[in-house]
Length: 356
Image 1 (cartoon, helix red, strand yellow):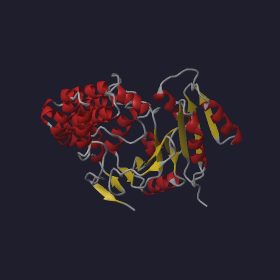
Image 2 (tube, rainbow, N blue to C red; image 1 turned 135 degrees about the vertical axis):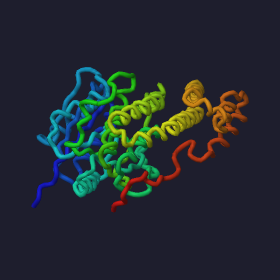
Image 3 (tube, rainbow, N blue to C red; image 1 turned 120 degrees about the vertical axis):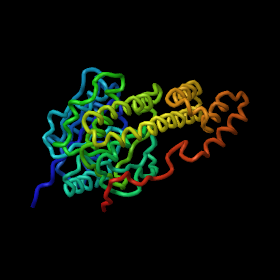
Image 4 (cartoon, helix red, strand yellow; image 1 turned 45 degrees about the horizontal axis):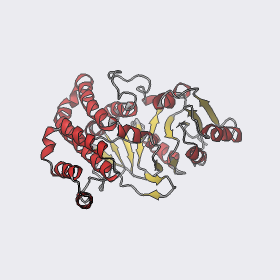
């Protein structure tokens, strides 16, 4: 019998003691069995290390564990085990997420079948702090192979990217994990390292999108992305990277330059509108100061957005002193399609090939 391809699963943890056990169990339960598990704890102060240690003792030789003596940052924590990996595929798993039993099996089968593809992105559902699972609209409306430069253009235009847990990398095709051939300077480089990596790989290689919810992505108040949103790194970083990506294409992939130049103005407008979405969310969450900052950010990115009806209504709501009027206007605004959350799935960008 042919040996299963080897898969390394890296679980990075920081103070997710109440979630990390379920995460580890979901990896151990995978129907694909040739899996090595590496866990890196970033100086947690809760019961995380006790939970991780208990699994190490229960499954000797199956799990490798390490703990930083101080908080070295999320990206350092994820990369702790990279140099130790010699497997065929790599998954970097956030310790609050949960895998479907067939996540690895299904992903590896497709990557083995389509050996030209650098990585696979799986669709996911959402799981709340209390464990209740909710469906999420798939980003693309079909499983497919995305050929360059379609997905890389999307990374430039959209202020969204896959969560770390959604991606399965073919290890020989990931040379950018340790060295990023864009400027190493800038306040957002570490936070967006995975986005940069995925952009580079998808610019030069086909990528698989799997329209099956094989991951449960946990949403809660401790998420690292929540902190990024409060400091507006999500928008400002994506905006800055759009220009960096264009510069990279100009030098390293000039055959796509015209397409990227045409998309840059669209990217700017999309990032500005995404700032309006966050403005709306923080009004709902009763954080008016942060909402005002996002409205200001939207206008700074795209001055023409002040003529946008959503922007006008958001300003009215923020300036409204009557609580009943404020709530009424907010409820009306929330009916705007696509403002609170994405309500549709998109056609994959050309060129692509549908797959089963």
